[in-house]
Each structure stands twice: as C-alpha cells, then as structure tokens.
Length: 145
Image 1: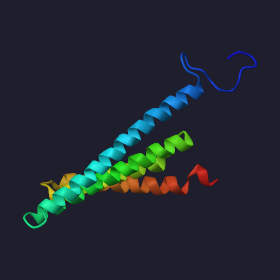
Image 2: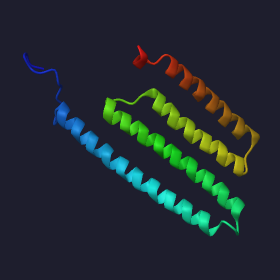
Image 3: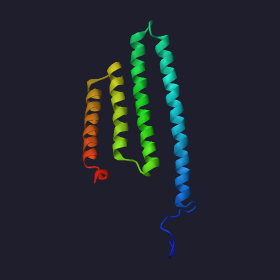
C-alpha cells in the first residue's frame, strides 16, 4: 500500500467494496435458488402426501419425514448464508447447527433403511461430539463478551 491510502485493501482487479458487492450478489442468487428449491420440495411433499395417503401411508410418511429434514437442513444453510451477508463472516455455531440437522436426517434415514449397528453408533457418536462442540461454542462465544 502507498502512504496515505485508505484502510481498504485492493486485489489485483477489484477493491474491497466491489468484491463485497459481487459476493453479496452471488450469495443472493444462491439463496433465491434455495428458496425455489424449498418451495418445490413443499409442493412435491404435499402432492405425494395427497396421492399416497390411503394406499401406501407408511412409505409416504417415511419419505415425508426425510424430505422435511432435508428442508430443515436447507433452512440452516440459508441461515448460514444470511449471517455471512449481515456479519461478513460465518459463525461456527451456524455451521454446527447445519451439520447437526444433516446428521440427524442421516440417522432418521438409517432408521427407515437397512442399516448396520456400526453405522448407527458412528452416527450417534458424531452427533454427540457436534452437540458438545455446539454447547462449547455457545458458552465461550466472543459475541457475548
């Protein structure tokens, strides 16, 4: 940097302001695509629930639970992207929340599918470790200081 220049940095092509605008635009497009995907998932869920309500209710309930967990994981992803746009960084707690939702969804899918005991134990251990990490990051968060 030259003497007397501002505190913002410049990359080879873009300064910090343009870089932030481009990233914000791309993340916004990604969030719109995720919103559309959630809406399509809800419509698909309702259609399958209606069509399979009387004939194959048990299988329909299994797929509905799996799809709802996927949508919850997607909402956690949106929450992470929103925190990036507002804070300019991603909080570790949001990442842990998203990972927990995805892994709990995997545990639910193992419940309905054919699974081995070792897969379930590994999944439960990873969920337990992530839960402990989530508690630690919440307790020792620098935002509360």
